[in-house]
Length: 461
Image (cartoon, rainbow, N blue to C red; front, side):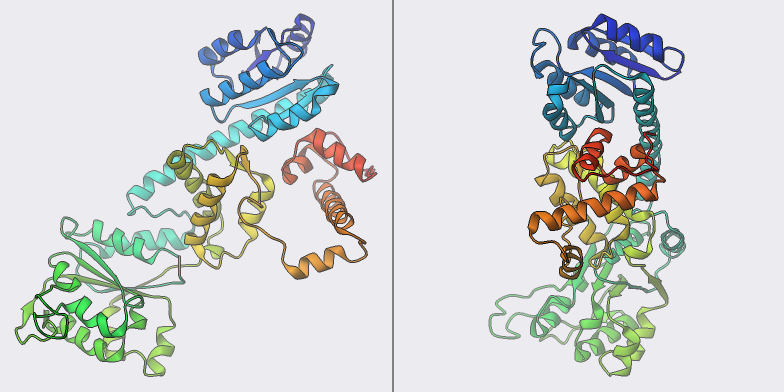
């Protein structure tokens, strides 16, 4: 039987709730914050009903906010339902902004409160399952070079990495910018017999053409103006290890010839040098360009392509990875919470909808950036689409404000239409609609009242 903690200084309310809820839950009762915190530490309930006005400050919300804050410190995932008086709605909304699950006005109507409690336990259990899955995924990521993914395409890539890592065949990685090509290269290196030797990455598209040869192969003292000493190139630094040539599709054709010689013969010559230097390294290459088109246009040598692509790994764009989007988003949420000492607990329902439907042109790199920025800037317990940088595009805005005479009218029109659409989608369920919209049930009722909305099919379930 699930444990439910009730913290309220009103004996009658405590007894009423114990009598009404005792058959479904194991009830824990406390009359003040300190007593409630003691019971919470001992029993770890997933859901708490907390009065806003508690002794010694029964006429203010000081103790209620203190209790909420300390409960969330003890367990950031606990679902706290605030009991409020009619004059405390503003404070209750503030409580939700800092982490409360919902609020309900006194005196409690048992049937309505049961629905909220049931939903709170349901959500708490789902989140617990998701955290277990997340931990399993993250553990698997440690075995896959730090990469996270559960979609069929990524599982196939993980399998390929295991198969090819211990051989020295050349690997060619393709995919859009931000899909994680360097992570794949690192995973191959870390699973290989060369893992104790250097992993040396070089971005061929980020270095000017006149410097790239020296960067790759090094140069001899006096080989050009400013060459005051002999310098080793990246290829030599990768001795016994792995050389990762990112954006190889951007490499000038004249350098492709020298790279091909190195790959075929295993020797290099520094710029200005004549001595052959033997190199033992494994080469992994990557690009985001259409290599077949580059070959056709004479921008990339066909013989070099066949040399570097014994095994090809194609990384899917994030938009095609299904539930991986949410798995990655929650991974970044946890990682940046710890890194920046924040307590953002989750993505709102509206944010989840945004994450799943956004095109992600910048792929995993963009997702990571948006989540990190949102966590740094947000003061709320849940991230909203606006925190993630979502802005309505011009056409969408134009369509929504037609027939609206001013900015307030446009906002009200969008708000009303969204509420009506979601309630219809949820077949009239106010509880489900509120969850989908990322607001509390009382807030949704207030918004419906504001817009004179009384859907015939609406139910408080």
